[in-house]
Image (spheres, rainbow, N blue to C red):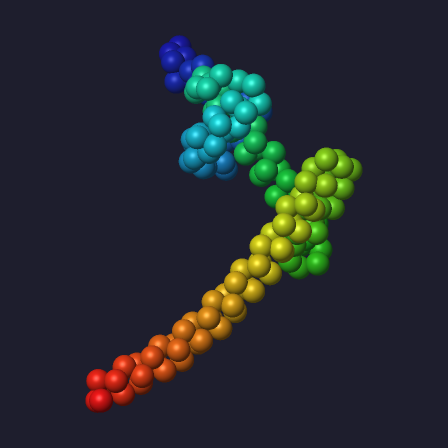
Length: 145
């Protein structure tokens, strides 16, 4: 008649809508600082409650995980996952879609700027090296005289 083997923890796990710990393992608190800053920026106090931060992190991670799984389902039809899969999923949410396209275009601009900067840097290095060699020859000539 001992029913202690069936404790309340097994009931809460069975009736819970949360994924089991084996199917959803991740580090908690990895976005804690960023979320605290974001929450403060959106009107919370400078040090929001840790429980609030954890809740927001759980909600965000669940949303992102769900979005990635949906994108994988879409991408599996073509055989690969791409940015367009995510854009397709958020196509009806215009603020998100606009922000994503803005960030993608800014990312492309940064890539181009880095490419130009690296090529300019390489050109400057070559010019500097040739100028340095010319100066070295001038100093050597002066030392001989």
